[in-house]
Length: 339
Ligand code: ADP
Ligand code: MG
Image (cartoon, rainbow, N blue to C red; front, side):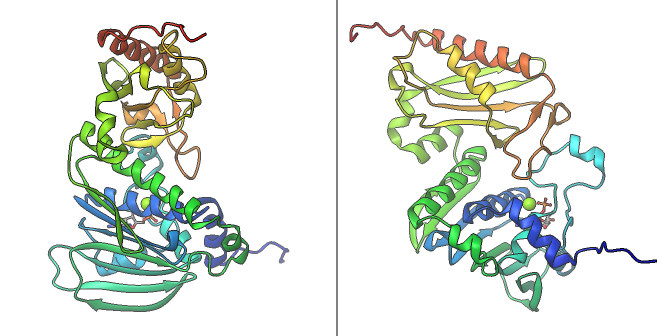
């Protein structure tokens, strides 16, 4: 007996998954840069042409892939990062879904070059719209380069939906900065249309933040450091006098992954109570380390929202540690002369 239900072919399933994972060029930047970090690269270069509309290339000096993996990495649910469901609660990598490359290859032209240190020759693979175009051994540097061309070539609606180059480049720079901020020890470079936008040598966190947001940032920062039973809190908040009317630079990282959290944002705002002029917001760069078992990252494909076991305790610790640091640095309340 046969029914009306059919299994979708892989390339169709991949294209559907891509709709979730790849919203714009910046999403590709995020996925490729995170893969480079997971590959233990110490140098990562991002080359962008036309705000990612014609080229997004990430070059790393990480562990590379052998011939077998270089082909398999484009398969759906193919990952070297987890083996079983339990591993989801003990994650030490950025990736785990095994979906990014399959998705990207379904909606773009992709050229992969990769080589492991012990091999003399590496692999060069071209894949377009999930179809392998060519595969050959080649002389390539150690590590991996993914070049993504003509993103959304087969989804005109998505391509037309892209914003101006200025807007798309802004999103790319945002993703680049988030990954660079999460990994100050890694040397990151960003080029747009062959001109250098960022060159961030291996540095400490304070230097990295100033390297990204400008030398003047350094004097605005108040360090935070707190170790509790459930979380280690590190990073910086800005002195209240540098608060701005716009949201500006506000970042949370959990186990070196950028996340968004309205709840934790509130914890920080409440620590500044009485210290800010009306409508002004501080900057913050908060790094939380928690046991991997105490969070769930698998609640959204882009992984920028996560679930904490004990959100309330986290809130309280964060609030008190920011308050403490602001107090220690003799930050006086704003006197309301102006009103
Ligand atoms: P995930 O990162 O969730 O595992 P991806 O589709 O992003 O899924 O990548 C699939 C696999 O390809 C990874 O698990 C990894 O083994 C390999 N891979 C991807 N990018 C790189 C890279 N830059 N260097 C080495 N291996 C890589
Ligand atoms: Mg990945």
